[in-house]
Length: 230
Image (cartoon, rainbow, N blue to C red):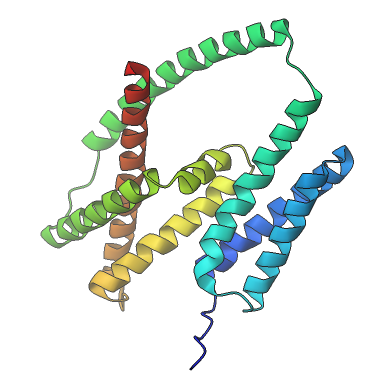
């Protein structure tokens, strides 16, 4: 029986795994300093898995799973290890409640500012040609589908939440999203061969990412609302 070929990593997967590798090294140093042995073992195991992926000893189909687990698991286990040593005091809980209230107020203010900015942006949005509108709509439709899939994937959602707390992670995540959207454009329209087609691809990518983010935000808001009603 023929052995199945091991698929190589794509450019996006290599970038993502490089981020995960650096993050794991950082977690490993922290775990060594705090003697969190369970975290140390997990970090080492995941580092070995990433190296196996780069050396094509593991199939590329496991790349995104290893990436998500590498970002989330050490973080979660480190938090659990820290909680087992230190108990939160009543004063700290009170301060946490106050910070939450301040964060809600800040979020409401930020939301109002964003809505005003979106309104101004919409008023000054350049008119698109019929072809550009077609491509923009196709990108938005595909992005919405990816957003629905991403919002329903707990590991993917946790990865995006974690990106907000790691310096430089947002830029890397955006690069991955752009490559993903660009790949979808190439599937639908073929790789661009001139300046006009490159412009169309850029429009597709922008609307893809915007629709994907809006869909995930909307589904997340609905999920929180449903949780409150319960």
